[in-house]
Amino acid sequence: MAHKNDLFTNVIEQIDKANRILKLEAGIVEILKQPQRELIVSLPIKMDDGRVRVFEGFRVQHNYARGPTKGGIRYHSELSLDDVRALAAWMTWKCAVVNIPYGGAMGGVICDPSTMTSRELERLTRRYAYMILPLIGPEKDIPAPDVSTNAQTMAWFMDTFSMFQGYSVPGVVTGKPVSLGGSKGRTESTGNGLMFVAREALKHKGISMDSASCAVQGFGNVGSHAALFMHQKGSKVVAISDLSGGIFNPDGIDLPAAFDYVKTGKSGLIKGFEKLQNGCTFVKGAAAATKQLLELPVDVLIPAALEHQITGENADRIKAKVIVEGADGPTTSEADEILFKKGVFVVPDILANAGGVTVSYFEWVQDLQAHFWSEHEVRVKLRDVMVAAFENVLELSKKHDVDMRTAASCIALKRVADAITMRGIFP
Image (cartoon, rainbow, N blue to C red; front, side, top):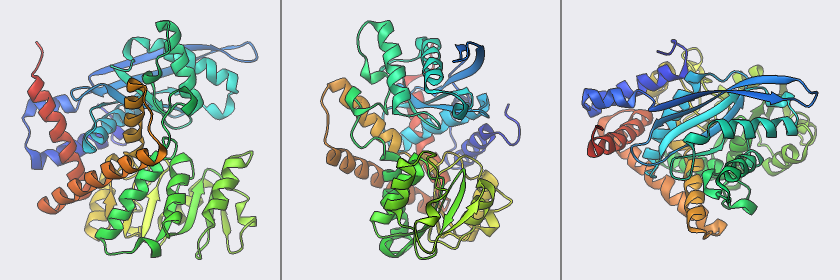
């Protein structure tokens, strides 16, 4: 069982909370609380200096009742098996909430990619792909990028799998380069989906998007695209942050310029941008910037960094009217209770950031059909999926007078439980 502060504890608490409404059969609840398959692998890698280092990796398949499992690959120095279990479970709920035919999985390697060369990361990726080979495939488990992995990582992964098959298998991963069967619109899909549900949440709260203020914690792929899309729809983004610190401007940050600065800069960080736009101030350090950003009096707060950023300790100081979760698990269960009582409208991770897995599903479908869609088609289909899912969750939230996370969890658990019940227990 997870320790008190582990992410998997949040998963169990969320299941129990949703089940107080659903009242599922006890045996089904026990199935939902346990990953169906876990693999721990040892990864010996020859480093550029000739040394051999051994890394530890994981792949967890939480539940495949509704279809093949789907989930990212994360490279992080503080990754744990319980983290991977929790993220795999959230992927199960995420796929079920937006009603795509996947179960949830997650994987990763304990490492610090910032200290490794591209050649070392390629060898690590190929070794990891080889070691989890029995579990993956277009009809079994389809990995995707996550923290510190990207389209290049997926290209190496796909190539390694294909070498053992003897032919190219583009559908084994998503988030690939378009030249290898990736989908147009995939890179920005999570941020795009966040914008779509933020727009619906603001509409529900009676706030116009073109006059809304917004703060975004985490200016990586998800946060930067979410901020850019919010800006394009007229919202005033007054704060952004990353590992280097935070940029603040009450009159609004020039998002296209900040986006290009990070994209083209050597460091890939926002530090230094404050010198390019009048009115911007810089707060050095992630911790100091995060504290200030999370407590700003904005209409929309988008936590798009890592988990457990909004807790019982700071939830009382949150002044945002709407929180749209770009990261997985940024809000603890204790904080959820506080925010709900305060009237803060939280769009939970399993709904808010499901744009990525939705377009991953589109990519997988395109790969299987060898027929690809335009970026406009992808964007329209994504919007339709995200808006429909938001409306379903909001309706259930109103019906039972519960927060949006509990409502989303109810929808997800019910869909997975129905699939398990219909299939039956083998043997």
